[in-house]
Amino acid sequence: MLAAPSGTRESGPPTRALPVTLTLAASDALTEEGAQVCLNAMEGVRVLPWAERQEAQIGLVLAHEVTADTLRVIEEADGSPGGRRLPVLLVADAVSERHLVHSVSLGVVGVLLRAEIRFADLVAAARDAVLGRSPMPASMIRTVLNRLQVLESQRSRAPELTPREVNVLQLVAEGLSTAEVAAHLNYSERTIKNILHEMITRRNLRNRTQAVAWAIRSGQL
Image 1 (cartoon, one colour):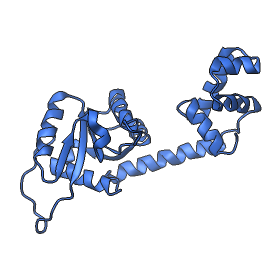
Image 2 (cartoon, rainbow, N blue to C red; image 1 turned 30 degrees about the horizontal axis):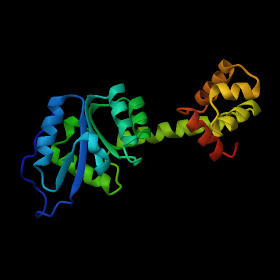
Image 3 (cartoon, helix red, strand yellow; image 1 turned 90 degrees about the vertical axis):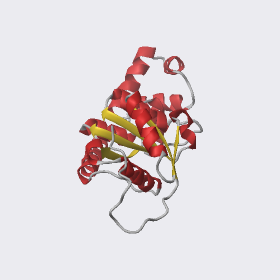
């Protein structure tokens, strides 16, 4: 659990804190309840339940270890009720390069290491994030940038869509199901699924909807 605020600050005269509305989810109930109590006691901080996250300015996800479950919680923020993408601060003991890059792709705007912060630091980071900053150690920022550069290089070297892939995506964009696309092009449904899977994997995309969006942006549809 994060350390409770000390109640004293060494720097400068007191200033009025910028009000911030948070929502949080933690990997265990004890951490979540303790964080809610400590954060609610701080000046200018309002903490909402995760179920009411659409009303919050920033989401906090607290985890000892970043796992697939942690990423699923972060992904919930991306699909928050009301359609708004909720920015998220991830607080963890450590995070692998793979999970770091994945979490940023899901909407994480800052990453904090539990051993290095107190609740006061967490609130300060949340206020920074609301103002458009990205609280994150410099080493992590470099990791994300390097990984994104590698992905962009891979994408730029990837071959263009084949005529068959274009035909399939055009029909998918029109709202046809896999079975309907197969019937229209006189292929088996398995063949259509294989075409989509190969193309989505080759372009490092997440699903067919993202594939259609990418093809339109790149001028191939």
